[in-house]
Length: 414
Length: 175
Ligand SMILES: Cc1cc2nc3c(=O)[nH]c(=O)nc-3n(C[C@H](O)[C@H](O)[C@H](O)COP(=O)(O)O)c2cc1C
Image 1: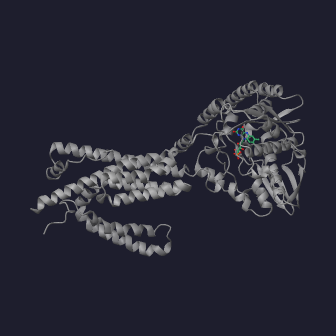
Image 2: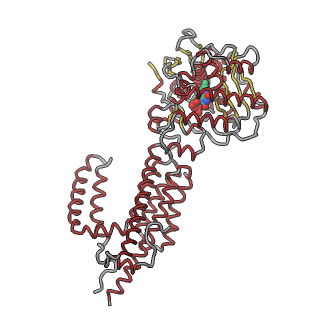
Image 3: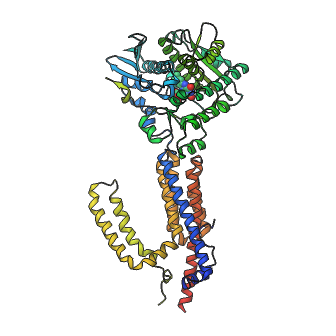
């Protein structure tokens, strides 16, 4: 412990130090002492810089600040704004939050914000529409719970229009549901799941039964047997490698990765270090160190896919529709996906969206490449069904952190 | 009449600096977010502090000697302030422990001449460890905590040494 000063019992020498400053022995001791103090000072200054960096990067403020306020403030909103507050807590590809809402008298219109797009990762905007469907499902659940009878018209201005849905809201008696209660608790869980713990068949069946008239033809298919898990796990790893090898896909992925606390609080979107499923220590170090490069981020993602995500998946679910290119079916599939996620969240099951396969399949079509992943997906699905969105489930080892959200005010158009 | 046991020739009494710091510190606070109403008293306090420091120029060597002798305490105080700062940014219980821990270290430093080093060390540990343990994963807090205990312990021992030295000096000078 006596790092910085001389040991006790030396005060006689010290007095000599004052009286005879030119004594060479004393000078050496003085030098040593000064060196010790110097090192101590440098260490203190260094730890001060580290402490400041910890503050600047929000290391001790995980899930705090305006970017995370919508998770708690949505219930404080009045009237129809509360329904929008629930809608914006939905998942979306890369947390791009591609939605805008217009509030009229007794209705809400949902629009796609086409600028909030993940580019080469989602070349045909499949995921964008699935995310919009998820937001719509939250809005409908919130409407029922808050005393409205929602009447939804999908794509009222045609399939290619950015007008995604009109929701007419007549007054009715409140119908709170178990799914509605999970809206603020649902988070994408990218941590490892409990190894070897399988979801009971009853839970898989319950999730498969969450489709209703609003979700149209969309269906959930499970791939939970050992051989199926292994097959899909290997495909996901290969698809991740292919994504990394595609400069445009890799860059559009990286563009939504947020490593700076100020940026997160300002932009309130994207995938954060806290939401990446890293251990608390690794996440803190990642924040303290300089921002990771695109290549380093890609490598970390591949390693997590290989060693954590696929290794500990208790099963994979694929939401499928008859025609995955059809925006209306994408919206319906998105609604089913959100119902599944909310149900899982209320039943202690973790869920992680993993869409590398469909992202690569769409990219193959866009670039005119051989349909390597597209064909694999076709083989996996029962005939007549097209994969829309894939996820893994399992039992959580960690509680996932919240991801940022733009405010309700920021997504309202007039 | 025996001289004060606190005064060692060549070293100014640490309290010689207290009035200056006492003028500067509140003066500086007046210029923070306290509000423009406080700028005038702030200017008066800082001005008086500067005037008082000018007096001290004649005592530069003694000032240096005092700083030199108390350097580990100064470092510990700086680290304790980091603790308070990080505590203020942390959430919930961790934040409370950080702020209280940092303030407790400052209190230990203020009373260091009256504390047995072992007791001082125990108090340092009690003040520092809970916050560091609660946010162990943050890397920065446990590191600052370890440094706090190391420099704090060195400051306590150094202070005990000087206190011992001074009493020896009194005996030597009083006969
Ligand atoms: C259509 C869709 C596709 C997604 N694809 C992925 C994916 O491939 N990998 C991933 O880690 N997360 C994926 N996500 C999850 C989003 O990144 C996540 O919803 C977003 O970051 C917000 O976080 P939250 O779900 O915890 O609120 C997807 C979400 C949606 C709706």
